[in-house]
Amino acid sequence: MQPADRIASFGAYFFAQLGKRIAALRAEGRDIIRIDIGAPDLPPPDFVVEAMIASARRPDTHSYTAYGGTPEFKQAVAAYYRTRFGVDLDPATEVLGLIGSKEGLFHLAQAVVNPGDVVLVPDPGYPTYRAGTRLAGGELYFMPLVRENGFLPDLNAIPAEVLRRAKILWLDYPNNPTAAVAPLSFFEEAVAFARQHDILLAHDAPYVDVTYDGYEAPSLMQVPGAKEVAVEFNSLSKAFNMAGWRLGMMVGHPDVVRYVHVYKSQVDTSQFLPVLQGGITALTDERVWPWVAERNAIYQERRDIVVAALQQAGIDVDVPKASLYVWFPLPEGETDSKAFCERALLEAGVSMTPGVVFGPHGEGYVRVSLGTATDKMRVAMERLVAWLTK
Ligand SMILES: Cc1ncc(COP(=O)(O)O)c(C=O)c1O
Image (cartoon, rainbow, N blue to C red; front, side, top):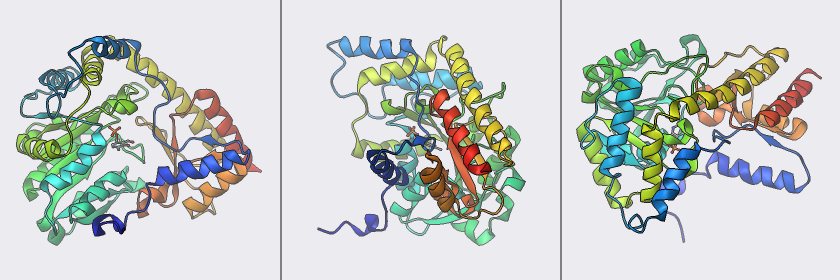
């Protein structure tokens, strides 16, 4: 039995392959520390788990729930946007609940892209923007993210002929994989650009609440009029350590929210109500903000361990203000991020992600994730420094 043409060219997801390889190395007795995948290692707040359990104990929470999330979940998303960003959203028309934001990123292309439409994606960037576009029959145009430009795309460098056919412009700040942040002024520029060229701006913001040194990341929705040209994806995965719960949201342009809802309601039948209840608590309970600050302090300590070690090894690394990552250039003399990470895996027992996995402009860089226990992180970095300086 052959797969359909539309999926035949897809290989296994990078982290699925890497997971298998590491399992095989460990089976041989090798001690490997993983600082590659962007998944939080810590649990969500207790009171969120309790809210989910209390809801699951009720006899009336086990049936199908409303498509695209319950009205209460959508109201909680709107309340979070009001408290956190000062943004007003209509929960009925400008908010959609998602089974993790990844499905929304993928569905967006299915809902708005016709074959031959161009989708502008960051390079390096999260792979789902590309995968969704390819499956919808769209054409990709890569916008290089380079260090000299703060890893922001140069919108004015996109050729007019490409812009004429462009349907979506993807942004993602705080950024995965580069860990760069975007000032509100860049979002203003992007909204004006999208309006001028009649392109849907899609902002993916799962790291907006993973920030350091007192930095507060903005929402694209803070730009006046953003809802007329843009949607934003957000997630409880990284903000509240709820990655396995699969809870995310899409907000903004009401027509686009409706198109994705129509598409999505053909595909799934929403989530388990107690999971949504836990999400409502995370988004609206006042206790969550001190919890987020404490959790970010843990990541910040890990960030400092990683940055200090890389500097000790002579690497010129930027200190990230946000996201779950440190993105560093290869040491002098190295040019191949896959080969470098492979040697680090085998010789130092440290698994990191080669930058090229995120796109051609990721070559020359490596991504370290901060989602590993602090003690292990310290050992991983000691091993790496010893290996790099030997
Ligand atoms: C940039 C980016 N967008 C979206 C996601 C998906 O998150 P979720 O768990 O909400 O599907 C991730 C997860 O790693 C991510 O890094």
